[in-house]
Amino acid sequence: MAESADLPPAHASLLRVRRAASSDLDDLVALEQRSFNSDRLSRAQYRRHLDSDSALVLVASANHRHFLGNAVLFFRKGSGSARLYSLATQPEARGQGVGAALLEAAAAAAHRRGSHALRLEVRTDNAAAISLYERHGFRRIGRYAQYYQDGTDAWRYEKALG
Ligand SMILES: CC(C)(COP(=O)(O)OP(=O)(O)OC[C@H]1O[C@@H](n2cnc3c(N)ncnc32)[C@H](O)[C@@H]1OP(=O)(O)O)[C@@H](O)C(=O)NCCC(=O)NCCS
Image 1 (cartoon, protein in one colour):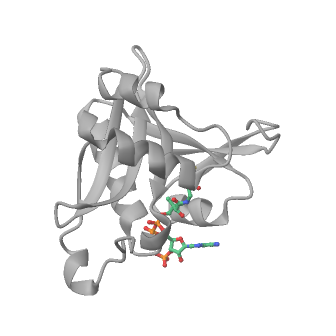
Image 2 (tube, rainbow, N blue to C red):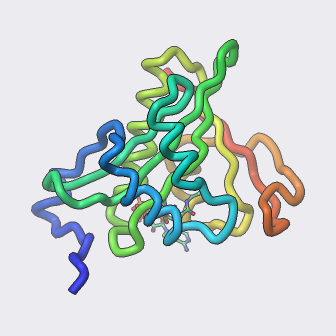
Image 3 (cartoon, rainbow, N blue to C red):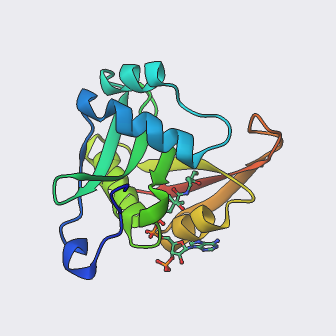
């Protein structure tokens, strides 16, 4: 039987966010498959991002064993804004604060690296993600028509850091 990723209340406090390692590759790719129907990051792209100075991959886990979710941040030389490229929680662990913890950790990491803002794009039909971002201080700054491979539009959001 598959191990449940549910977080009983006693374990929720053990939730931690750390930098991803190459030993996380299988989990990262599997979660990508489960979470997105298009615009997925490939295994080769994850491997490259793990080794890149211009990317930061974060993993949320509990009890040092559950892989609960991940976030991918990109940094660009000469840009004061960091980009949250991806955020995903294991389906069984959603609604328990994992996404919020990853979002806060991503904002803190970007701030530590000197970014003054964190930007992201989100599908206009992704109600769960949009409400998470808005509750965490992101404001809508633009719309991109047919941004995703399947033709869906994106909202662009930004949060000032610091
Ligand atoms: C978006 C996502 C990362 C959120 O992760 P999570 O771990 O469930 O996040 P949290 O538990 O911190 O918060 C979820 C919030 O969304 C709310 N929510 C869940 N489903 C929702 C829906 N259909 N509509 C509106 N809000 C919803 C929950 O009520 C919760 O809010 P609350 O804390 O006020 O109760 C997760 O749903 C996911 O992985 N989705 C698939 C991948 C994805 O779309 N990523 C975003 C790409 S931009």
